[in-house]
Length: 190
Image (cartoon, rainbow, N blue to C red; front, top):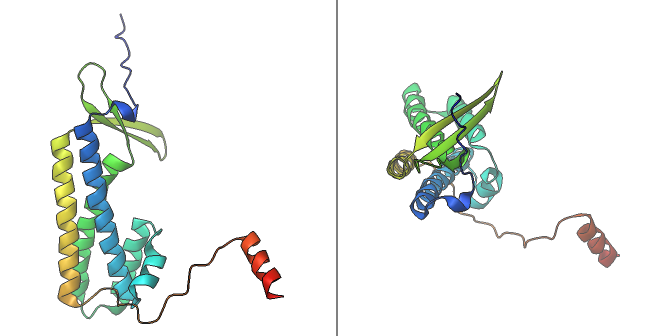
């Protein structure tokens, strides 16, 4: 006789508040790390904080990593400096891998054990699904590690004087965008 199928609860409203809080902590720590990574890229490009934010805000983390490594290859003062940066960037990648388990995978609850599960789907070459138990304690540990990696990256930047510069010229006022807004401006101009 076949065992009955387990029907997992994927409703986010069914997740315990402590679990949701842990998900938020991982997400907040990763968001902070992403911002620090953007500041590193901004500083390496010699941009001010406003232009750097405009450039990096919607940039994917792997792209930031690749650009930073390329800039280091072309501008670093020594191979040792590249090695130091690569070690930290490897830690950053591992930290974002921890984040991805929480943020990019579906979280569900086992109906009888009450365990929280992270479901990863992959379709590279073949369709695969992996379910792994996730715990609040592990998420707290991961959030702490993600935060610490961000602080190591920040320390690296400070020790080498890398970071966005302060904006010295005034910003243009925000402009309403789109075809309709352009047409309205043209009509007002003449």
